[in-house]
Every structure is written in structure tokens, then in C-alpha cells.
Length: 190
Image 1 (cartoon, rainbow, N blue to C red):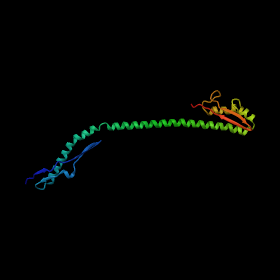
Image 2 (cartoon, one colour):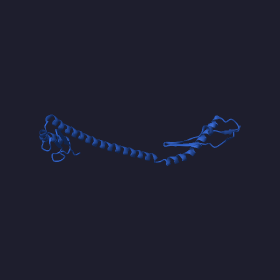
Image 3 (cartoon, rainbow, N blue to C red):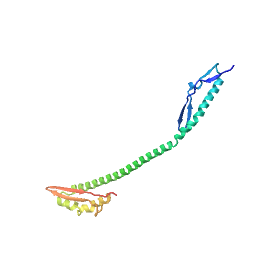
Image 4 (spheres, rainbow, N blue to C red):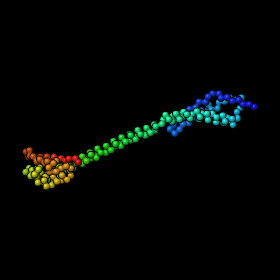
């Protein structure tokens, strides 16, 4: 008994490529569409299927190599762009941290200056009730409390304050029966 086989149509296949390799898919319905005069044996079907799969794999290899060479270097380029974006982000965070430290130091000096001015005004409120006493104790640059206690506290707590430069000023004035105490505190950021 003679068996005659002929292929009914060409087999379509789809080549899919990934960065790790490529493979070929032949649709199952198109793998073995053979016309025979008699029912083929399972051994001959397996042999024919193997021939078709090998044929598809052999023809797919040059195309897979072309895809791999066309994509060559893109992973490296993507990695470099990712590193660049990350580096810019890190530099921005470092810059924000530096600005934050500067602003915190400035806020600390402002708070210290307000507390020192409040200390002088509180002492004047408690100890002196007359204009002449306030002027003798708190007026700058010769007031007794100003020169002996308060100027030293300001110089110790604020940067760049000496008696010669950035010295705080205290002005005691009277308008009618009201006594006004004006305190100006200066400092120089390091």
C-alpha cells in the first residue's frame, strides 16, 4: 500500500522577540493539513510535524538575530537615562536640605533675638517705673543694665554681635505720660 502526502498550504508562523531571545509559533490548526489517500499512521504524522517545526525554527533564526542587533544598546541607554534622572533628583534633594538648614538657622536667630528683646522689656517693666530710671538703666550705649548684662547675652547668643559692630540699640522716649522702649537687635549670619 502506497501513501501519497502533499502539503495543502504553506504554514504561517509568527516570530516573537524578547530581550532574552526569540521563538517561533506555528498555529496548531495549520501544522498538519495534509491530504492523503489513506489514513496516515501516527509515526508518519510525528515525523512530518518534526520536519515542519525544524523548518520553522531554521527560517526564524536569521530574523531573531536581526531583531536582537536592532535592539542592541537600548537597555544600556535606558539605564543611563534612569541613572541621570536619579542623580538630578538626588541633587535636588541635597539642595533642598541645604536651604532647609539655612532657613532653620535663620529662624533660630530670629527667635533668639525676639527672646532677648522680650527679656530686656520684661526687666524694664518690672524694675523701673520712671522715665529717668529707665533711661539710666536701659538706654544704649551707656545704660547700666544694657552694658553689664544684656549686651553680653546678645553677643553670646547671636552671631556677629560685638560692641563695635551690629550692637543692639535701645531707645527710651517719653510722649506725655507714656514711656516707650524701642529695641533693635542686629546679627550677622555666619
